[in-house]
Image (cartoon, rainbow, N blue to C red; front, side):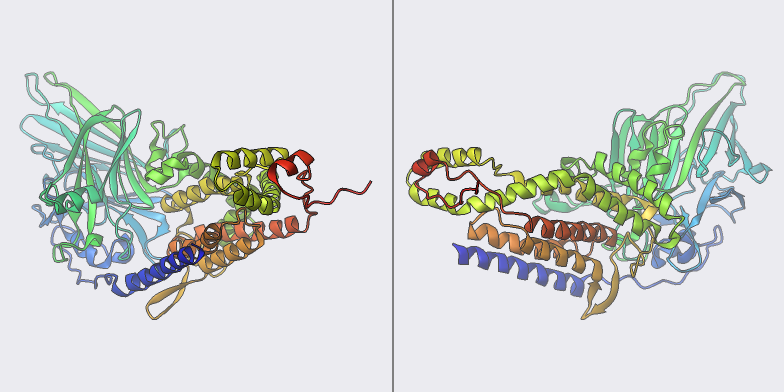
Amino acid sequence: MDKKNTTIGVLLLVAAVVSMILSAKYAPKPPAPLPISPAPAETAATPAATGAPASASAAATGVATPATGSLSAPALGLAETVTLANDVIIVTLTNHGGAIENIALKQHLALQGQPGLYTLNAVRAAPALSLADFPGADRHTAYALVSKSETEAVYRATTPTLEITRRYSLAKEAGRDNYQIRHETTFRNLTDAAQVMPKAVFNLGTAVPLNAADYGMYLNTGYGDGEDTHFIARSDLEGGGFLSWIGVKDGRPPAFIERPSAVTWATVKNQFFCMILTPDQPGSGVRAERVKLDPNAPVDDHRLYGVTGYAQFELKPLAAGASSTFGANYYAGPKEYKRLGNADIFKHGEEKVMQFDSFFFNKIFLSGFFAPLLLTIMNWVHGLMAHVSPSWAWGWAIVITTLGLKIVFLPLTLAASKSAKRMAKLQPHMQALREKYKDNPQKMQAETLRIFRENKVNPVGGCIPILITIPFFVGFFAMLQSASDLRFAEFLWVADLSAPDTIARVFGLPVNIMPILMGATMIIQMKLTPMPSADPAQQTMFKIMPWIFTLFCYTFASGLALYSTINGLFTIGQQMIINRLPEPDLPINNPEGAKAGGMKNVTPKKKK
């Protein structure tokens, strides 16, 4: 049995290595940049300025039809743009729909170490907050610029029956974040009769992959209904999948996904940035669409698709000469929990855009609680370390937070380690029991429980540190996948704590130092920790697990490996101290116990 399980473990390890090699060898290559030629109606943004894939930037010259999300040539003439700015954003407004062309983030670069700001909605299906399918006032309408100041712009368009005025403001106001744009659209009835209003459908913006290596796993449209949050992933719009393979579905991508619902906020987002519309009054539904960013790219290259969304609102009938105003705050910025969790500004749970518990295993390990807790602690530590080591502040925040957690849980860990040592010392007696009562499982179980009870040993006590660590590890993983705080954060040789710390490539394989260190600490820790079981199969699996875990985490964010490495180093020092403590003196020499279990006294009596 021992040889069989060892063989299986080794084969699994070899399979993992081969899988990693093949993945690196046959992974799709990043698309080559395409020539960028601005269309007559709009000026294309460069990749460095937009943060979009280079080949996707050519798509910035067109807009998408709401029904299909495919790019087409603009129907209007040359766009007339104006800009509003504050300390953190530059908002470019266009007269095409009287809406937002794009938003540049002053404090976030598109590419690390290169000039060019990250720009939201630079590659777009439509101008953000433009009206869709609103007769005479949608994105195909040229609005007139009525007024413009440093912090406010007003546009206006008229139809035979309506006057539509659109106002955008960056003026500082209490209860508004600097990344929020205040928007109001006023509808005025120009007729002498009451008028039934069509639905107002506002574009939420277009979210695109961060770069050519981003496969868009975190691209989605989401909304809150006042009680819960819901997300439509880009993969939901791709069609295909297992059901189409077995013939249940035709496999064709749906043109859109529509969700009738109360809408207290709605968003489109990628891994680290989002656009969130928070209306003054709830909406009535959300629509999500997939957008092909480059018409010339292969259909199956998922990296060159973005997502766009629309939020729908019911407008009340207007009396003759009357007017009504739709008001909303529009956030366009980084996914920072500290910012979005400010309930004085974001009052409808907009922080859930972080999606800390988006996956099943996140829900099991309560990442919705642990991830924001860890991020809150790290933000506090970062604030302290920013005065000491500004460039490495986030790295030190991870280190100090990890050490703090280890110290807090030290009493539990020590108790579990002592339990593990006592369990290890009982193994010879447990083996004798298994031999004696191998034909009487009930008797063996009763005797085993009696020995555990008399010697004050908890058979699962050694698992407590692992059970405590797992929710924090999963919480760290969830946090790193959503929070923009660690994007481009440096530490030691790591250039970006939110990405793998690849320092070179050998035969096409990335050389990532931090996960290798993490694996080394796990192997050393395993050698120092007493095995709670004498079962050879379990011991073999314990020895193989560090290798498998290292391969599993090899391409994860280096911040996660840093956390695990520091955790492992502390545990190694802790275990070395525990191993030097006196051996536990177990009351296994109880005469009745020796008689019942058929075991000799193996623990000498204490000298008086």
